Amino acid sequence: MIKLIAIDIDDTLVNTSKEITDHVKKSVQAATAAGIKIVLTTGRPVRGVQNYLKTLGLDNQADQYVIAYNGSVVETTTGEVIFSKEVGMPAYQEMTKLGDAWGDVLVQAEMLDDIYTTSHDINPMASRESYFMGMPIKVRAMEEMPEDGDYVKVMLIGEVAKMDDISAKMPQDIQDKYTIVRSDQYFIEIINKEASKGAGLRALADHLGISMDETMAIGDQQNDMSMVEAAGFGVAMGNAIDDLKAAADAVTTTQDEDGVGVAIDKYVLDN
Image (cartoon, rainbow, N blue to C red; front, side):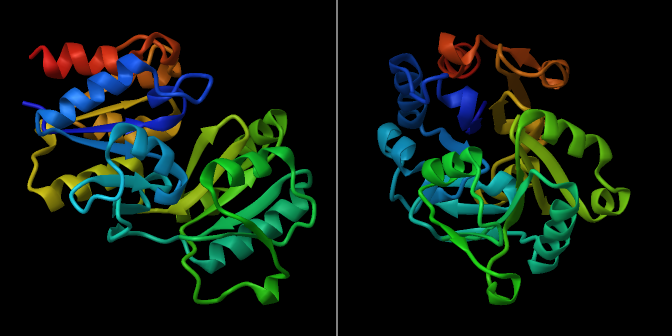
């Protein structure tokens, strides 16, 4: 019996218009009414998903949860942190130096409340990230960066071809020290080696006393792989990358065909 469903947001929970369809909303709310934990699992912080939590009736509750920052932080929807794995300021310093050498890429540090960068040129993709996360971008010289800040993750942001190139030539020592995920065609994320959506799911299940066999995860991208593999039942969206479809236990319809709702109806509510 499924007791917890971890759901990615972009191109999974929401369609290409960034909306939760009526079908998906009804299925999620039916699962919640049945006592099943619905856990939004995202690269964003809790404050960046408040509108979706509110739509689903999950906002500002001490017994509802979000796996944020690609599994680096697990919080209640009231903002209480129950699990955290930061990447630290050294990672930001190191990636900024590499970013300067690569060129045409913005490097930013994301903390619990703010985004920091040393770049004075904010590209459109970074502006979009700031908008959807509901967090301001603060431009600071490296010596002005807060040494005791919560450096949850570092993001590299640029055009698709540039991100493809950086992914292909990422230094091995960086790969050895950090978890690196391609969360979007424009984004590469650097997080703690012990952090992933799968690790966040395991930490939350343990906190709630839920067996991993009683969990389900739904996603579409490479950064969803760890939770789809960790969950008792992993579901890939119809629009998912091929590797995720191969790893999943089932494939549902696309984000524009109510894929999350279809999966919950078929594999949870009907069973």
